[in-house]
Amino acid sequence: MFETLEVRGIPLQAVQNLDIFANFLINKERVQTGKLIAINAEKVVLSQEPELGKILKHNEWNYADGVSVVCTLKKKYPQYQNLERIAGADLWQALMKRAGDLQVPVFLIGAKENVLTQTLEKLKEQNIAVVGWQDGYFTDEEGLLERVKQSGAKFISVAMGSPKQERLMIKLQEAHPKALYMGVGGTYDVFVGAAKRAPKSWQKLGLEWFYRLLQQPTRYKRQFNLLKYTYYYLTKQL
Image (cartoon, rainbow, N blue to C red; front, side, top):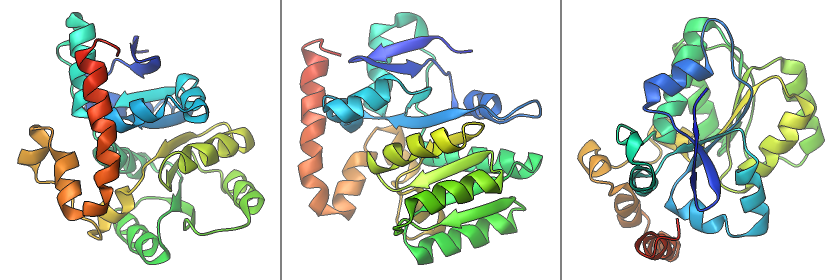
C-alpha cells in the first residue's frame, strides 16, 4: 500500500511511477477495487466546489496526473523527490495491456459512438477481453448499471469528462463493487487518433495544457484555473 499525501485537502497516492502503479492495480494475484481519478491543477481548483470536493476527498485512488501537482508534492514532501507524473492516458493503456495479458474482463463507457467503435476494434486486435460497452450518449442509466453488473467486468473505464464520469462511477461502484473503475476523459479520442496529444517534448516541459489550448482555443476560460493554482502555490495554500 502507498502512503497518502495531500494537496489542498485532496489525498493522493505516493506512487513513484506508472509501471509500479499499473502492476499494483492489475496483477496475477488480483485486480484492485475502487475508483481511479487523475488529479491535475484544474481539478484541484474545481475541488473547492462541494460536490467534486467530497468525491475527491473520499476516493480510493487519486494519482498525480499534472506536472504542477507533482511539483507541489515534491515541495511539500521533500522525501518524495522521485515521484513522477502519471498521465491518465498512459495509465489507461498500461492497464489495458495488463488486462489483455491476464484476460481480465473489460467494460468501456463513454465517447461518441464512432470513437468508441474504433477503440473497441483496436482493443480487440490486442486480444483484450471486452465484455461490454456503451457510448456516452445514453438515457437508460439503470439499464447500464445492470449491464455492467451482469457482464462480470473487473476493469471499467468511463470517458465522459469530469465531474460527470465521477458521478457515474460512484453509481456503478454501488451496483458492482468488485471492480476497478477509471475516469479517462478524452483518452479514447487520443487512442484512436481523433484527438492529438502534445509531443513528448512538450509533455516533459509540462506544457501539455498549452498544446491543448493551441488545438482548442475555446478552452481559454479553463486556463484561468491554472492561474488560480499558481496563486495557491506561490502563497503556500496547497
